[in-house]
Length: 332
Image 1 (spheres, rainbow, N blue to C red):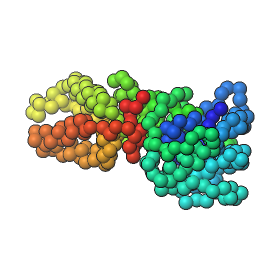
Image 2 (image 1 turned 180 degrees about the vertical axis):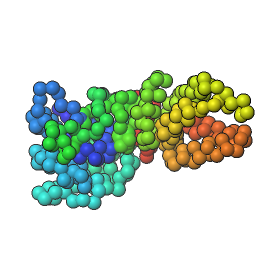
Image 3 (image 1 turned 90 degrees about the vertical axis):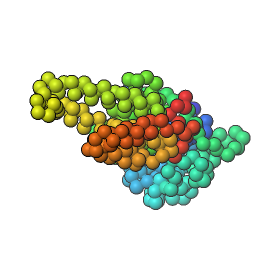
Image 4 (image 1 turned 180 degrees about the horizontal axis):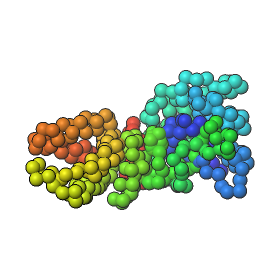
């Protein structure tokens, strides 16, 4: 039997993921999946999961209050409902009599008082006979994964898809999920764990422009090595077009330019996530990239300064355990 069923609109997937992971960190099993086994209809499958759970958490927001599917789930789980508000929108007509937890100001900090109030209510209903204890900031639990498409929510049958919210099962193992913590995330963004150089590089491509979540030092340095090698290969390929005898440069640098532009976004993303791992603002990555570009214009001294900035980001000590940007990427 599942402890908690989470109902939400697909637009709120990143916030739903943070909530699911936080509840799992309290030892609760959470159902929020968009996978429906072959041979089952949506109605039968969701109804079965709702009947089996101890708590039905519905996340009210601007998007979910307009979703007929989220409303239907809230109606089906009304006798065990714990609503939570993600923004200042009120619950739909007929659900306002159930007091909702206010998570509109919660940004993912598991020490936030509103989060503590919410988890205490969920724990009390999900495990009524368990001894009460103040919730602790969750460590990332071991997760199970079912491969997911990039879209967050359950893909409804034609004609229903635009209104459908998403449900997720025990949250996917992060080395395959493509969302940030914050699905990321999520969104967070989506956190995706990896353990080999190829997986680190694949993760950087999957989170191409997603700077949410956290990145280990190993991920940062494997991506740096990959970028350097790829740039060298592109430079060698440009030599096939010949060398300008006056400048000593290749006649064409088109391949190097294409590779550089293609690597720019994931490089900024992994730098941002590396800074998050050290509890620093990801916006510092933009400054480092600007310094790198400026360094190319200033010659050797500028290049050394930009290299020093890139190395400094790579060696920053990580935060042990979860921080405001997501769970510890080294957590099992």
